[in-house]
Length: 399
Image 1 (tube, one colour):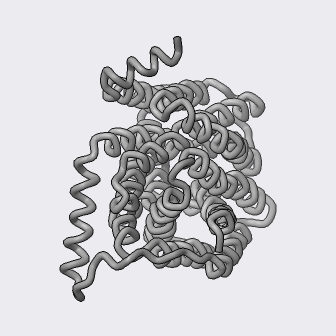
Image 2 (cartoon, rainbow, N blue to C red; image 1 turned 90 degrees about the vertical axis):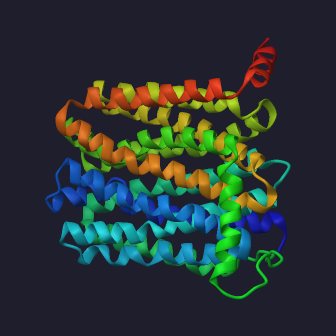
Image 3 (cartoon, rainbow, N blue to C red; image 1 turned 120 degrees about the vertical axis):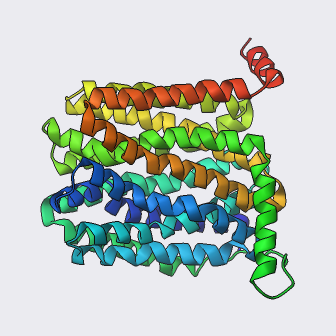
């Protein structure tokens, strides 16, 4: 199988997996949890708990893909996309829903770092464009999933949305077995758990000492705090200003559509002009649009702001993943992508929790303003951390 065919098939699998995942996650999950009696704090916990799985597993799963190859980790991840949605219709207890969300989080925790590392392996010269295209493919799932899920929940009930999500996941499982990837040479020759753990630890140490990987991952986390807050509370805010579940889902669809269209373009731009200035620009755009949302009630204006946030998200994501790949050593590429995913998921998990606590004690406007300020602070930190040579190069390039 050629590189282009492998890449195209991986993109199709990504679309199907993330349609399935996002049909459950936005806006259906928040509305389903509210239907079961959850308050704002509990909704924030339920939405974020699947991301907590990624916090603990993305780095180890990325490191294991460096040792055993990407395919075995991808297989486990794609199965974790396909099976859990069929369980949701039988849930009537908030504690069970929380546990199920934690298990469902295995999907992205295991699949995402290996998939990104696979793309970076396939395209070492044009990583920005390739990673932008792949993440745009997964964003296509985020584009279609909320709209399909929100519409089905509104028109036919929660069970229809969950079962349909499971069917999309099962198609992805079937297609995965058409994907062929060359396994790496064995890195652990001794049998037993101890040599594997020792090799994983070496990868952890190398990545943990990589300042560029860590700082860039923190920028992803800042963006994901806002993303997680929107995921949990934009549907509820939309309902509070008169939108229905389908319209709330369309807000996420527009956000995802803008991100989908922008990521390949901005990935190519980052290949040409550099990753760092685009990361700063993206964070500023995310902060500005996020802070404006609670001051708007018109559906059309909310669509515009959702699109603006999607563009800022695309600018950050297409540059940050490529920058982490560029900055990682070859033998620890999976661990580097896992580290970025872990830190990003800490932000993503924190977003609903922080927003839930803030909204429970103050207005949407104040709560969103505080989270937007965190993004601006992160953009400033990243700019300062680039160092004098990089800043001079950027200024000279602008002149």
